[in-house]
Image (tube, rainbow, N blue to C red):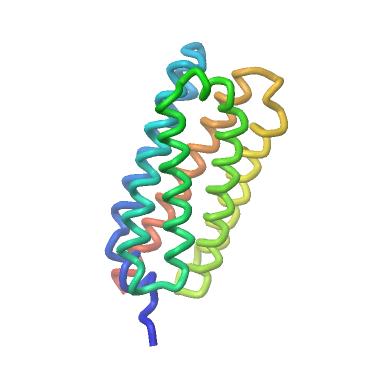
Length: 185
């Protein structure tokens, strides 16, 4: 019988979730405060943030392999993040043209993965799984806003992305805190 993923691996990495959460919150606030910088500067920041997230997700998936049947989903998510980050970094002009589609799709994909994760933690001791589910739904909403309304202009994308990144950060902080509290039990 396999030992629970959350009790064996995730709880040891609670600090990583909080660190990523703080990074995303700070990045979301920075984006909101610099809307006049335009796509050119933001494209680089998006690429780096997504690439770093992908690297963390790939590492986490590989470490979780012995403890979870779902580790392949996290690996797939990390690979998608890394590929999107590399694409963004490789051609910033293309990124500026494709940012509504790529970024919106990436945010929706992240939201779906967070919903899957919230349903997985529901099986454990967490009383906050429904909060994580709610944030997953909010993240998908922000991604859909970017995909469906890019013609409103760059400010829509800047602020919807900012809000989505802040929500992703809050999700990770709550998740990390839940992992920490589970570790204390």
